[in-house]
Amino acid sequence: MKKITVLMFGPHLNATSGISSVVNKWLDAGLELNIDLEYISTLDEYVPKQYFKKTINALRSYKIFFIESLRSIDIVHLHMSVGMSFYRKFIIFWLAKSRSIKVVVHLHGSTFKEFYSGGNGLRKKLIQSIFNNADGVFVLSKWWKEYIQELSTNKHIYIIYNGASIDQFNQSLASVEKHKLKAIVIAFMGRLGERKGVYDLLDAFERLTLDIDNVKLVLGGDGDIEKCKTKAQALNIPKDLIKIEGEKTQKEVAKLMNKSDFFLLFSFN
Image (tube, helix red, strand yellow):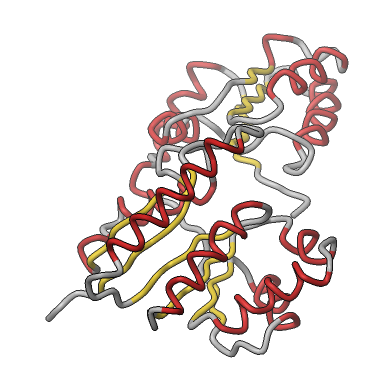
């Protein structure tokens, strides 16, 4: 049986991005075994400003789309967030529609509600036009589904939860590492900053260290690394009880998880 042909658009798979992480997990799980997939990067890396470089990235993706659309394409799958991510995908959306290709919009933007409500009338109409005309809309939770239903008349809205590859985690390693460290290890992985509640976590951890002396906190990820270090110093958290590390590979994330007793992930979005 012929496989469904899918063109998927999103940030580069090596970029520091939740979208990239999700897609990489799909690929690890064997997505390409079930469909004829081509993944096309609309943005090579998240760097503040550098608008010219980002424009070149987007134009390159449009060129690839024009070439690929000459063959038979069943579905265009757009991973969409806020800001320029929306506008880059908006162009691809209508290019695909002009060629009568079905389009699925996959919404990832944690602040999309603010992006919509804070926009002018034109932006709101553009957003509504995408959701109303999409052949399918994927969202990450029940809350997001209800929100998009308020904005759109589309009846094809589906919840696709972000997943994890559980086979890389080994519970038995946690107890081994715990005995080595003789400490309770708490881990956080994600973008370091206010939106993920990391500063609140540091406040809470300071209070915890006043009652427990064998607890350690490990923060890993990109974002406000130096600000988090400054905050930890201001709180007088002992240096030997906290490690604030940078971005990690998937293997390094799994290793950290395996030696942790608790994993915390909370967010204001």
